[in-house]
Length: 77
Image 1 (tube, one colour):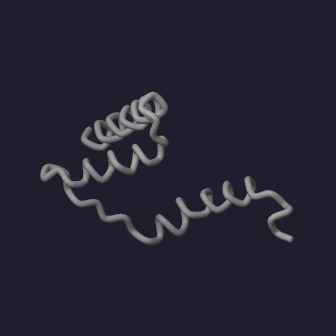
Image 2 (cartoon, helix red, strand yellow; image 1 turned 90 degrees about the vertical axis):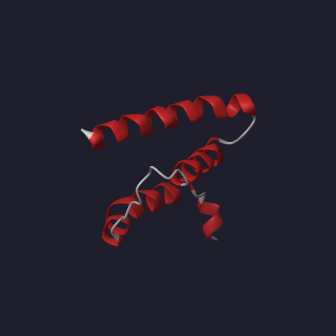
């Protein structure tokens, strides 16, 4: 039950930050990083350990693919 609660709160924070960021004149990723940093400094939040295999196998490839698709072909020359 705790994992579902964390996921729901996380999604609500992302949606709220994405909605509020343009209204206050800040980029959404910058606001999300600031929120993440602020939440991680709360004493009630437990440290999270992410295995490197998860980053290398599940998170990094989609990010690299998205960056490769958006890169113009002329930048390679």
